[in-house]
Length: 385
Image 1 (cartoon, rainbow, N blue to C red):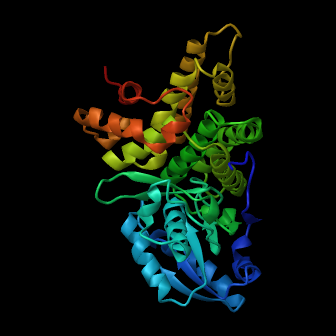
Image 2 (cartoon, rainbow, N blue to C red):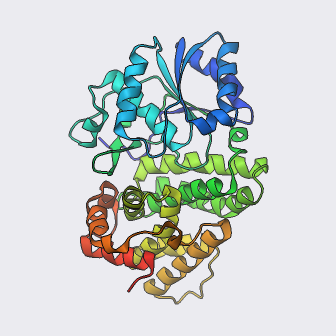
Image 3 (cartoon, rainbow, N blue to C red):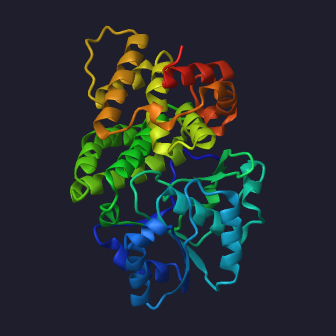
């Protein structure tokens, strides 16, 4: 049964919390950790903080540094083979969404028959997979508390959503200090993903008051604090607020999912190599305008939280225009570049629209995400007739 409200992840939050990672591992009765990360996290000195905390508690570890963006399935499958030989009994993810999703996948294969893309088919249910500990270093995906992971198929270039209610993090350590090294562009892109999770989960066809109140609060938090985090990465208060908003956005995804904005963003990433947060920033203003006639009250609230004012007599279509306007203005404020930056081949729009129309998140759209709807949205996003 799908329950309306559920969050099984034990979260340790606070500035400097990463120093207690060894205690967290011990609390799970684990003795040796398989630490998954990418080269950037290592270069920032964050992995050293993790291993220092493990050593302080007498916890052994094995390092796995092969993570790349939009993790392909072979990375997970090969990582599991390395894990099997390591003698480890838990998996620690250190990094952003790519590291966390790679680690989730490796941990899933500890208890479930591979390969990992077997679970792109929802009929193959992922069984209980304890032992995952996540340490996010970006305020973006919220994967540390969500019930999904995104794994790319290197042959089809499709980003596959794998739903994993039974394989969420067992523990999560959120330390805002680990996010202070993010450059401006990465802060903007990951923060844009946070906002997308909040506005989309707020407006799916399975959204309820339970998740909507969380979304309303944290849309406002992102509007206030993301620009400050972009302007000054050393602003610890901004990093704290965005770190919390990211996890709450991930939680809202677990409760109510995303919809058409993520169908488009996943496809733009797969077809054009577009950074996910940027793709969300381009997609959601138009998606919210599109669904305004179906849920004008919610769209009006989002617009108000993003700085819009209303006279009170606006039509749903006018509300849609306003939310699109203020969302795009916010994108400009945080430094999202023009979509032309990505040099996308627009002759492929039919191919892209077809992929959008069958992407899994579209099932949660309040309006049918047909091929025609997807193509219309893409044309508006790219500004073509």
